[in-house]
Length: 220
Ligand code: DX5
Ligand code: ZN
Image (cartoon, rainbow, N blue to C red; front, side, top):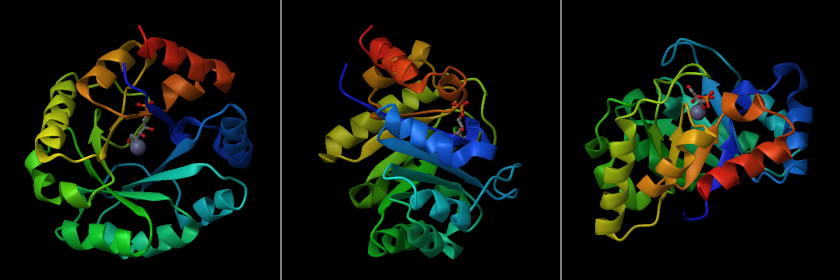
């Protein structure tokens, strides 16, 4: 199986000790952290926004993989870039001006990415692929950690990897939701490069050992 990035979702960390959790990820050898921003409108849950991310930025060198589950994200992309997001991922379903929003993220100096809900077809993002650093294939309906992986999403990852090959592109494919050591090998074989894991990662400390478990699962 090809090399991959594990991006632990801070949604499953201890929110009362966020700075310590981020430091623990760094100490365990992680390079990315996945930041789930929820607005209570696009998804039925609320998490955190730019001030929390800015505070973590001052204490961390991790790559901030920022997943915006918010309506009309164009209103806030500048605030998230200013807060220190390295990558900003917006949902195709959340804006009618996806191209403009993606171009704006790139102009602000962050890596642009687009997320697709499980039922959203790949054609929603097809013409934007050359502009993207990453496509996030949601493998649960966004809003909460700890849900079960939706099996048909594996086909979607495969189809997206085929599209990438046929267009000669190199954007990353990220999967998010219900990712565990048990489905890691299948996801990597289908073409995923970045695995987000919340509950299956933070629920099993120490983090260094858990990272090893995912790496071992990849080579199974
Ligand atoms: C879901 C979030 C995910 C979530 C994943 O709305 O986008 O990043 O934290 O959690 P697990 O890995 O527990 O499904
Ligand atoms: Zn996420």
